[in-house]
Length: 99
Image (cartoon, rainbow, N blue to C red; front, side, top):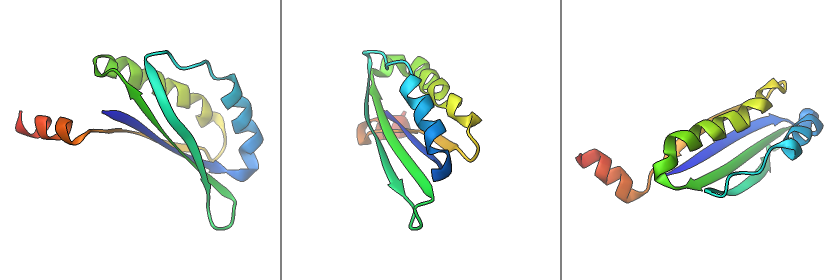
């Protein structure tokens, strides 16, 4: 399983977003991240962000809480939205469907 975080915010609040981002504590060694990756909308006014988090499945509950808390600080920014999703590998999905 991985956790996928999708977020977006208006370009006009980029400075506030960067200020929070650079103050985030480092991730624990048990978590690796791909991203964040950025995309802008056609007009360049909305910034979209995606990141995937990989971790030891035994730590699933605590890692999800940590990631949620990590992004929660951004919700103070006007227009910031996010979604945190769990995605499963084929093997994990089949195991859960059969069980």
